[in-house]
Every structure is written in structure tokens, then in C-alpha cells.
Amino acid sequence: MSGHSKWSTIHRQKEVTDAKRGQAFTKLANAIIVAVRAGGGVTDPNSNFKLRLAIEKAREFNMPKGNIQRAIERGSGSGEAGQWEEVVYEGYGPGGIAVIIEAATDNKQRTGQEIKNLIERGGGNLAGPGSVAYQFERRGLLTLEKPQNVEEAILRIIDLGAEDVEEAPDAIEVYVKSETLEEYKKKLTDAGFKISGFELTMKPKSTVPITDAVASRILSFMEKLEEQQDVQKVYANFDISDNLLKEIQGS
Image (cartoon, rainbow, N blue to C red; front, side, top):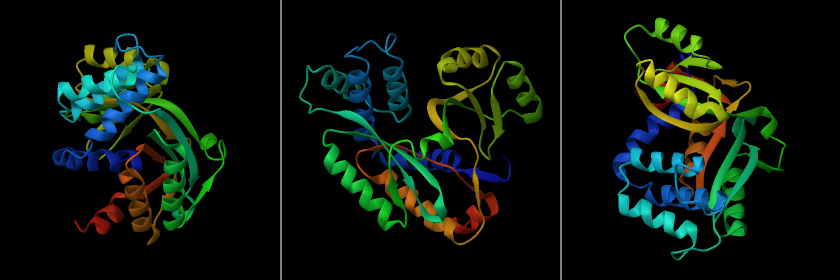
């Protein structure tokens, strides 16, 4: 993928800036609450994989331990919280790109309407369950710091059993089966690789190359969706060339 940027890469680079502003704590707390509830109220991260991932992400953003603990308590029902749940929306954006939106909310009607409005204002349309999901597959994603010899590193990673390895401008992205994410994380660590992040993701089975003016509309569309207070993650199947991305960003 060298020379091209998917939304997963663009989003990761954007997160670095967002983390400095400290505006993500509410969303991180909501993710923890939902993880506890989805795990049947289990508050031990060693027994609740989704919670462990949510806590790990919170720590990446330097979220205070007290905030994390309060979110866990709210998820277990020992603190004040509404009926938080995870909701998934599917739809299409500018240029016909497919999008999947994961949200955590205590008011499905409000969240659904707000997301519908954002999609339509962006030039897209909300679709029914399953209409977009078939274009993606659930995978574990590990982000590695780039070593000096990238080609050699990629060959070693493949030998360890990775499903797919891609070179991004700022990292090496390793995709594995979702159920083997932790196992593969340990393999890479033991092999001496430096892991900068790991998560469950929705990987597009194929991407749509974006080469014209609609690219800036797509990026604006994606950012507005992610800025919605209940949205946790947005996945899309577009691919923008690095040169076009730099042109849009004015660098």
C-alpha cells in the first residue's frame, strides 16, 4: 500500500493530533461501559477481551486511572449510567464509498437520527443492516513501528503467520484473524517487533481508488461522522493516493 492511504491509516495519523487535545475521554469511557455490559458485567479485563482492548486504547490516550475505573463501575451498574449499548449503522458516502459506523449510546433514536442527518448532509445515504457489511471482514490489526529494513521485517512477519501485511507511510500494518489478535501480538513482541497499537477492525475486502475532487468531500464526511459524540469507530473502503492527500492537506 506504499503510495496510498486508506482511512485506517489517515485516521491513525489524525488520532495523534486529537490525543493532544484530550477530547476523546468521553468516547473512551463509553467504549469501556459498553465493553463491560457486552461482556455480561465482567469487570476483569483478563476475562473480558473487549474490555481489555478498550482499557488499552484509553491508556494510549493517557486517560487517568480514576476515569477508567469510574467507567468500569458505570458499566457494571455500580455507578450511575443509562442503558448504554453498542449500535452499528451502515451506509454510503460521497463517491459511493461504503461505510460502517459503530456507536455507543444510551438513546438509539437520537443517535440514529443524528447519524442519518450527517450521512445525508454529506451526500450519502443510510442503508439497512447487512447492505454494506458484506464488503468488510472482521480482523485484528496490529500497528508496528517501522524498522530499518522494512522488506526483511515484512517477510519475518509473514513467516509468523500473518494474513496480510501492508506498509503504510508511518508504520507496518499487520492483519490477523480477530480471534488470534492476542496470540499474534505475543508472537510479534517475542520476535522483537515494537507494537504501537492493536485493535479489532473491519477491513474492506477491496478498496475504491479516489483520484479526483471528491476526495476532500470524503475526508470531511468521515471527520464529521467521527466527531459525533456517540460514534466510536468509522470504517470505509476508499483509498486515496498519498500525493492527492498531501495536496488536500496543503502540505
